[in-house]
Length: 308
Image 1: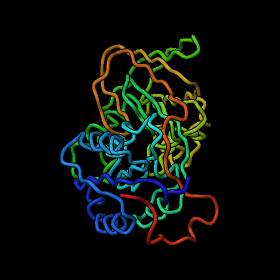
Image 2: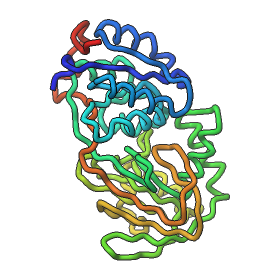
Image 3: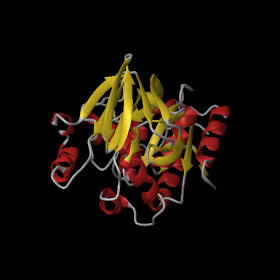
Image 4: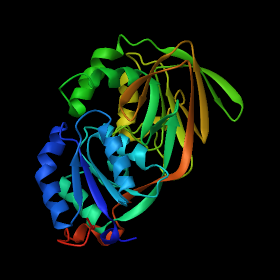
């Protein structure tokens, strides 16, 4: 399905500094390709704008913003048949990195002009949609703290993590899949649709976003002795080679913990109950990705992407 035939709308979140920096290029591209463009005004507005774009019969809806903006737009597009485009401006960008869309705005716009749709799985965690990862424990606490600070990027994330890890208390939980219950004490637990949180931190090596399955990774309590090896394996993509790290791949997981607590979905945090269910929705979201081979050699075309 060539992108030149798709009626297109860009949804831009200018509260992201990287999206603001890319705005001129995005607007020029949209005007050249007769695509419409709207700007978010408040948290949650991107989802409303995406729903309106569907009502207006747009077939390619492009999220220009951080991971939260992408999550909002993707949530509205799930099971709709419309195609999600990405101009990823987030600090982690796990989805864009997984799909080969991460990088400059110019790179993302070339994907829109010359790419192809790919059908991806999506996940639900406690009824909330996620497209990259969802989880509890340390990662949820870090996400909550990180979202409250102004210092963004991978260094900001590492700074928050370093400040919290010695104070974080591991928790006991029970993981259930295929009717089998297993008790574990975890530092953090992730259910992943993609292989990484973002920034190359591969929490679920080998996870594929279109295999109809979710990948669970449960990390044991972190001590001075194992902290450095665990961190190294996280970024080397070999965390699954440690015997004390639990890795499971299923369609559904159920998790029980002692009390309600934080849950992160694609980096946004929510209060969830003591029991959480994670489920996959196979091939429920279409996303524009680079075409095979020659894509990188094709410049952005000056016309034909969309019809107003």
